[in-house]
Image 1 (cartoon, rainbow, N blue to C red):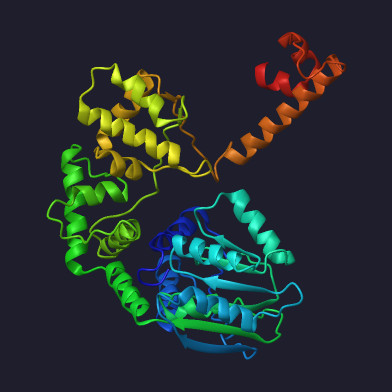
Image 2: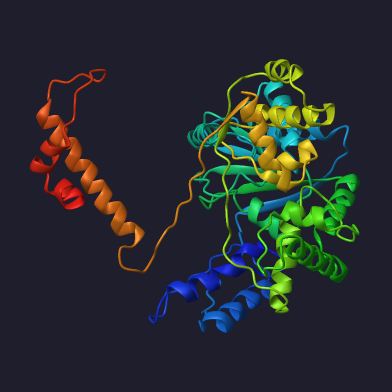
Length: 433
């Protein structure tokens, strides 16, 4: 919330209004470092949308136990400077820790590898790690097995470590608010701690460029509106457009919208948010279509062998292999968006269904039947009640089966007679009777 910050948050008020009914819904907004204009924006938003008067409780941002220091650095000496700061300021004894914040994933890996090579107990942390890896690293850091974490700003939410004695910013953060939030993770036990910012002129210029690319001009917002109208015309002028941010950017033909793969999604959503404020469109709930596909092979070489004997064109073959390569390289625990697959293959979103079907035809992928799930809230027979009934039925069924065959092994096959289940279980009778 607050101007262009996380535009999806602007739809919270609509959800509250639609599902709270007649009774007023308590609303609590929490933020660590919001600027006054952002606080004002949030308050005015909930007042105008749901009639809620938010009471401001400001605990202040002052942290008198933190010492702040800015030190000059250069790109060629930065790793050594990070090592020197940690060697100087992190206590040698005990289990306290230090966090080194970096601007990119590669930087975290490079810093952690350098520190580990120097004999420090260090690891990197960023959003590209699997959930298990993140959990393991956070726990080792919490108990003191790891003394130093080199991290992007993905490391911070939910940190449960009171004795962080040092926060080093290897790169200049994007804003003063970001810096205060990240530096404020030091010394939560109220004991003295240090916050060191390594300053390099090149880093300042880079942050200015990132900041400039994240801003939207009036011209760009208009370009997004034109792109959405084009999609509507192409799909039959229904007045309802279902499209990803990537599809909207692709449809923007004049290239008035400044492209940047790292910020496109947020900037498109921000543009849509401002268009809605101007009453030029209305954004509804997200519609998600899942392609439950999985590869039947483990290497691109196998896929090449299967496609070599086919009659597809070379261009088509390259597009299909690009999809396979991306699927193989992607982390197992993360989903893959259609925008990503379109980006690597050069295909339009409307052609992606056919590409996935082709992979299935050639025996490269297995495309299971899509499932659509509807969640009902606040109505008779709502989803929570149905889930509770299904859970009770399953519990009853398992109990009857254990009674009927208590000595059955895990790999044994036993016939299940439905008539006996109905006789033994009232819940079963209620479902099938």
